[in-house]
Length: 338
Image (cartoon, rainbow, N blue to C red; front, top):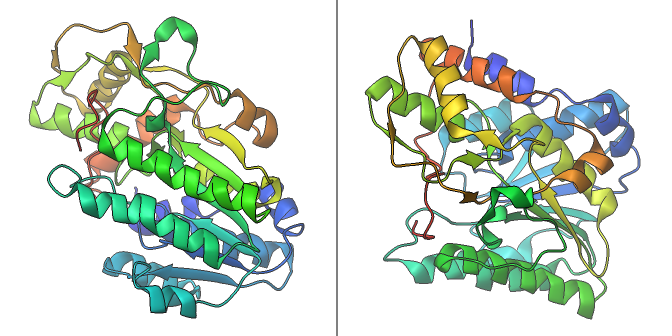
């Protein structure tokens, strides 16, 4: 049976490749925005890899830590924490200098009506962080939303394609990238730009959202017929290993699973496990937010968990009464309204 502890253990089990790479990363690792959806298990994953490698290195988790579950997990696993409001200049300046930074701070939902807050977090703050840590290697979490919606026949956007953000959230994500690109070009800061499409944790994500709609009898919108997603354990590994691939000018990489996942097909598979038929609304379109992850797969290998297994795990989690983070992805949104 699934439990919270079992899920956290799976998400934080380092691969041999991560253990090998953690030995090559010089210096300590600081994770900014570590209290969010991915940060706690990323920190524990890094710490476990360090212990398995038999080396000395600190993992420092920095956040306001408003989620008690995240705080408990980090403390239980012995991860060093610093409580900090990154938008407070004095608190940001007081953070210790480190050789490696993973930047996960950001804001998405609640943008509509409070656009200024999203721009402060996603656009203004990165400039200050890039200045503060200009001598560090920095992995910057970004989003596949900065790409335009493209035809399915394109196979998805590559890192060489032009960006085309729709809506203020996506625009602010692009501004975040530009702030760190400035540091890479002006100071020589080594940056790895990490454009993520939908991590799957079982407590949240596109598959959780589908399963929840199936269980509640809510129609699933298939106007956007496909999506990309990736097991969060693999996504976190790539973020840590990406420290070795930071460059100046910035290195850009799409991070997601190799498949264009059919929403209808995935929902029907979930429905079979859940014992309930999904309901669909609208006609399937011919375009979507999709990314080509060939470069990250060539660099880091295939994700550890395939899509069929993720679908089965997601259904098992729901049936076991697993906790929800209450953070829907809005994967069906096409106009950039969050």
